[in-house]
Amino acid sequence: MRIAIIGFGVVGQGLVEILQDKRETLRQQHTLDVQIVAVCDTAKGSVYHPQGLDAALSLQAVQSTGSLDSYPDVAGLVRGLDSLSTIRDTEADVIVETTWTDLETGEPAITHIRTAFQAGKHVVTSNKGPVALAYKELKALADAKGLLWGIEGTVMSGTPALRLGTTALAGCTIRAVRGILNGTTNFILTRMEDGATYAEALAEAQRLGYAEADPTADVEGYDALGKLLILAAVVLGHPVSARQVSRQGITHLTPQDIQRAKAQGKRWKLIAELQCTDDGVQARVAPQLVELSHPLAGVSGATNAITYITDLLGEVTLIGPGAGRRETGFALLADLLDIHRAIQRR
Ligand SMILES: NC(=O)c1ccc[n+]([C@@H]2O[C@H](COP(=O)([O-])OP(=O)(O)OC[C@H]3O[C@@H](n4cnc5c(N)ncnc54)[C@H](OP(=O)(O)O)[C@@H]3O)[C@@H](O)[C@H]2O)c1
Image (cartoon, rainbow, N blue to C red):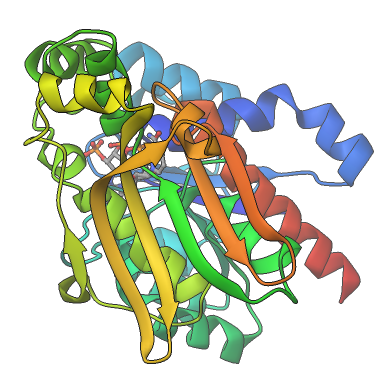
């Protein structure tokens, strides 16, 4: 399998590290041999070799100098292709799209993925934007071309939240979905229950790398909202738009609110929720009081969780990491393995 990576940041590099570490296992246990033919990144530069790049050297270049320009010159190496040329004009079978998420426009990822499908290439991505905003269009294009689109990493990183809903629970009717889909806010609420103020907990989350310098997307619920849009479209087959989701973050919660809940045997959690109704789907992100006996109440720190409420199984809850270099790299690997198995079956 030949892959081209568009966006060589934390997750793109995490995938390459995993592919290196597991090279032999992937060959022996899964007959999967991945060759990286191109890596393209706006600031770090771009390298392409039709016979494949040296994965270790690409990591070494970026990690020691911050740029692919220090990748050694070898015969046949092409430098400087932009993302669209990399997608269209290289021999990759699969495009790995790991550029920034933009939940307002979905770009540049929507254009990258559309271009890949038009060029007859499969795609795996951890980028929420294109799935939240353009799932129907892009999935239809992939289907029309007989191509596969792996998106597991867009919700709860490598924890198989989407596979659980779409594959393992197929045959059940899913009546509702409730999740703790943002690790930063869950970490802040956990620390506030331990006695920290909101400002102290946020500063700690930023120090540990869970929260961005501008934490708005997390603490005001926009990140969780993006994941709800994905779950509605992908798992429930009922796309909703951001305007249809009622959204409230955690910034108004006080230490007194948290302690009062604790005294009542409850816990505040930022819950992202989809409820199937006769008219469609109701979606909201809001802090909710959760009974301590519920599995979601026990999910602490930066961990994520999702509960599917179904007709045949009742409630099924999955708990696991929601972010991280290798955790999200693994989501991409799981999608590559799925594509490999599907190609073998054809
Ligand atoms: N990190 C996580 O734990 C995690 C978890 C789940 C999902 N995700 C998603 O996975 C994706 C990657 O995340 P990340 O943490 O790896 O982000 P990141 O470290 O910021 O990497 C994104 C990379 O994409 C590059 N890029 C942006 N636009 C590009 C373009 N048009 N062409 C080529 N490269 C482009 C950036 O380039 P420069 O900065 O070099 O200019 C950057 O290196 C994001 O969509 C993110 O939301 C991340």
